[in-house]
Length: 214
Image (cartoon, rainbow, N blue to C red):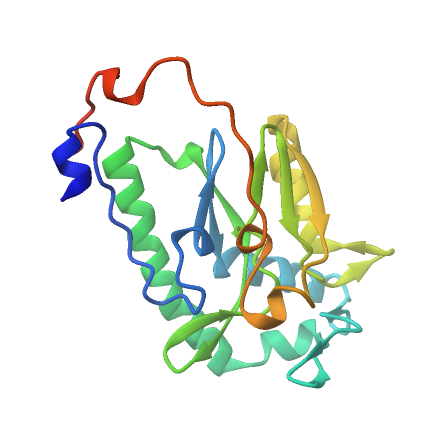
């Protein structure tokens, strides 16, 4: 109600109850384009690795989670039907948010980039299987991104390579930061533990011409 009373801008309501880390920035983010996580793009990457003979490449290599080794192979992830089923359900909610953003903000498909992500089911909520790269911090053209610890081929993380491949041609610079111990293991990510100092615009917000969304 307070936002509506100001009559400047409008609300765009997204569904994020599925997220263990209950923030919209856990499932989408933006710079001059919008990012959202995608289980589908993650599985496509793993399937490509398996076809190329890298089925034993490890995710989360050398990491601990719940006081146990966290590493798991590409083949093990792809062979887990329960994990796939949960992520298909989570993806339905993300697709709903995608359509909401397109309708409310006038975005097209070309304005949205999917980043690979995977989630465990925690009592009906989505808990990140590896650091959620969408929960990043935008610093002008620089992006502080949670290091995903994806499968490595020739000592290069394939999740990082994918993200660089889709974002750096747009003039964005990717910086992957290890937040596993200080944030990820406790349910947080880069955006949870950082913030930015911004220069406010010269024009006062209450003098801006109102924009209304349907």
